[in-house]
Length: 206
Picture 1 (tube, rainbow, N blue to C red):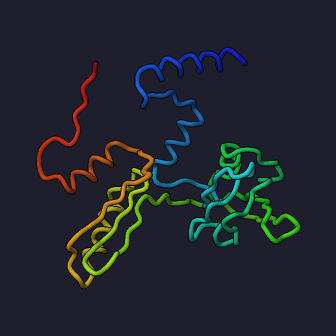
Picture 2 (picture 1 turned 30 degrees about the horizontal axis):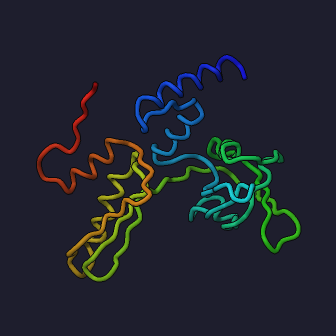
Picture 3 (picture 1 turned 60 degrees about the vertical axis):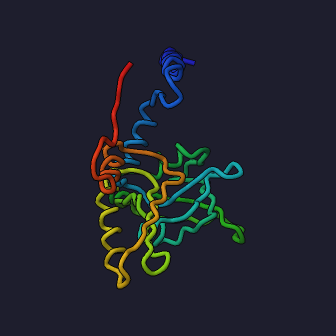
């Protein structure tokens, strides 16, 4: 282990001792967080996870290069640009890149004996943090998956569509389960839509 890694781990240990919510972000993790909260990124447009030792597609994002090319849920990504894929961070790093650049993705698919190769062109992929629909006439549902730079704007648009239904909106379920967090300012703006007066947040140092 080199000196830089030792210093980083020492700092991580000190930061962890502050409270359960503090941690040191190494440069690559900080970049991932920045991308996740920006509201968009350039890539091929898939949600992935590590399953049984394989980088596996959870789902392609509708309208993206991966979706249009026919990449499917449960596909196992084994190579990107002829480089063997071994973990999630490496897979994400290889598939992301400048808009308009080509990338080749090789997958294993259940029922197919031979690997499938997809030649894709990277594009701007929007990160959607809002999902909304009508549960039944008069009752709406909005799920906020995380807080990105677009969350408040997308939330207001979703709320406007729900309120434009023929049946007046009598109730709204705001679902924050499994919300991964994100930008504090966006969470405050969402709260401000519902809270008429008083402090939403106060911060006091030691």
